Image (cartoon, rainbow, N blue to C red; front, side):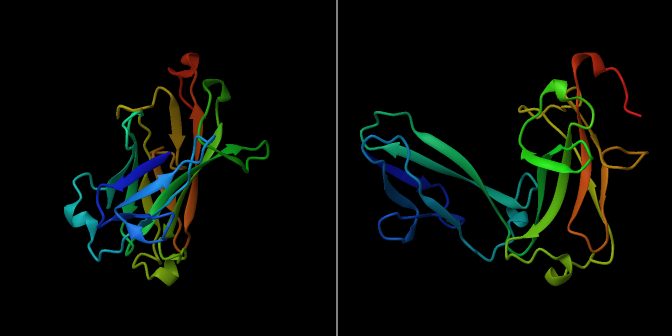
Length: 205
């Protein structure tokens, strides 16, 4: 079955045509007989524009939607949103790890259970660059000799605060949502507690 895959903004994101290798706005992806999936690649487009100048939500990037639909409209159209960030700025990423018994990072995770309890996970805020120059000193960060202050937050799918579900601790005893990336470093850890119903009225020492 042939599926048409389309990017909503070819100035930010292009589809790599599986047949020709060309970078195009719309391409045909063939799902082989007897299969339910077919991979394809997308690539960001260096446009020389600082997206923050046109960025309504302040995240220094543009959200592009990629649609997939079959020619006969037998299936509901599929879609996925892809964020394209500025090449001339570093990215700030958040990664979660299961906390090992010795307090170090365990396996990488994307979810927690209420019963996982206190210090269930270690969160890592890291700074990377889309040009693969991860070190802030190499990138030329003007704040390389200074720490970077990060504000932590957690929200539910609808955007409401998730403080009844998880607690975050960035290491500052006076402000648990404050996390400092040390001068010259590219990452810093914070702690995540999973909260049960019985623990939602308590406080962490």
